[in-house]
Image (tube, rainbow, N blue to C red):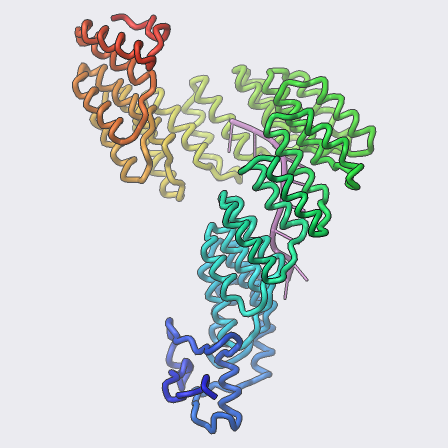
Length: 560
DNA sequence: GCTGCCGGAA
């Protein structure tokens, strides 16, 4: 019995008095090969095999205590009391109890859903050590958790060390994760491995891969996968075909997509509402209104009921075209088709009114949606915030922003960016910085847009030094500057008649790998002219024009 | 216990 020797080297993970000594944070893994756990060893220890050489502290089996603890564990997990569940599991493992795998899997799922994958992994570890046997669902839940929290490498590592064979769901979860991260090549390698291990891909597998193939290599390549799918005896379903229709549309071949849609029944698969919605969206975005309306009629005629999304697609594009009246008509006709408008139905209308600066109509729209029981969401509020700032009611926007939390809708990055930009534009950078601090305390990380607004605001107020300071803070925050931000500073320096420094900054900008834009040059030319260096300005202008960096027309308003 | 595919907004 090689694997059991030498027993005296095995550290006991169980202290002799569990009541006093806490569970050690780091335990030596006592696993010799897959499936040999501490409890297995314990069982062996109590049998003749080991002749009593192995002592595992006070640990011994206690089925009654296990039953009781498992029932408690199940209750805790059901009540969502994850931390208490974990504590109980630790105590159980400690006294050598064997937990039920079902509540443990739920506990893992709970931690994963909360984004606490490290805790979930701790649960899995305890389960494996205790001698309970995690099944494929347990591993799939953990792998899915890793994938959702953006840890595909941990998912792959777990796949490699699973003590039960992975199934098609295991692989599909990882395929999805890899494809989302544009690692199609890795996914295809894994497909080979999957086939070699004798695990048969299913319709999910191929649909995931076909979708990624459409995005990465085009529909042409994806069609080859569809052929392979057929060859493997796996029948595509409506989702598979929808993915392909979407791919064809994205490549701008709408008519071909329509032919594909019409051919679907001959492939033994009827298109569903999503198939139609994909085509409808494509028709709308290419301005084919007549076709879109005809398709809606076709759907209804074919007995394919339109969904809220169908109407929302129409409303969205009507609003973009400024046809708010027609959009309202569509909205009002939704109930006839058994559809209740949601926030995505109202938001484009609200946005349309805001864009036309018809704030009263926008507010009216908001009131209608609320009176019909449709709660405004963060997009609704962001739309209003944008509009308020635009019409100069920044103070009202600030007030609304501060009330969002109490309206059950927490502000997001865009909400803060909108108001910070509004404040910066009216010269109230002080309040803007206050909001910057506030958003940070809420765990929202400012992005390039946040900083661009602040830098531009300071520059405009003539506080170029402060603007440059913020510019550096932004870089310390790990955010790469963009041309817009640099241009604001260059403009600020030029206005302060510090054109030489503006030129230095321009050089820094280039060395930072930030590509100057046409504005960068027009600002510099204007700056030179402003400082009375008309000749240099004209020289630079003609140089840049001959290089094609600056168009003559864009300098017409510049007084040189 | 029950994991993994498609369509809509600022």
